[in-house]
Image (cartoon, rainbow, N blue to C red; front, side, top):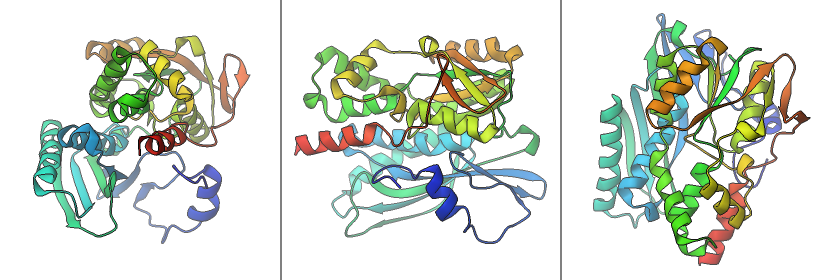
Length: 337
């Protein structure tokens, strides 16, 4: 298990997978490493669920931080192909958080949920000694719909095209540019522009757009482990090989410059808000054009083949051992003290 970040596949298999309580017949998709959501059958209706920590970063501004936090939570259920519909959220707030600041966070969460048609159904809110930013709680996002409309996380098939939105490391680069603008050795123009990209990350609406275009067989939010981690998780789940063309992967020159200044590997740095999408080749053009029409960068970066693993430019790769953004974040925190 890494000292920071999500657990490894081996840790999941040995420490978590054997101990999952009773085996109920109504669980249609249960816990798997690298899978964003689970599915329960409720009298013939599918209930997709995903649970995530709630992260509030005060230096983003509480309104922006609240919106960013709830988008991350809702994204993991949006990749099921169903629209997020319900949210349960728990806050364990640090004692120093003022009422007005919480009101700003909560207002941003309410606005985002209202716009997406999400009902907040239950939760818990309290201040506790020992709690601190940014990890201030947890939330479960839910989506209700037909089982036939579920896009399975292991649904990629040989012959499918692989579409990537946004590009690698945009989230982590944008966060660092927003939180540590004076500690990054880049032109101010680069730092400011990369920081502004945080507001462009919208995996929930991108997932809706891709699903509405048709032909999507699997989707994965590119979080910890970055693009390389997402490729390995999705390929392993489906039992296929992903063949990727590095030159086709969307690249933002300013994000590249900032990552180089920080010494951060873009391909293994978290990029929540980016979606990796497997698409039937007959629908690829429709999916890419629909995403681009709403202003989202999207490109075909490869295809699924018979086999296993992830091949980039003809060479086999290994899953990343950790997320490249964590050591950078810790170093920036230390130098900023």
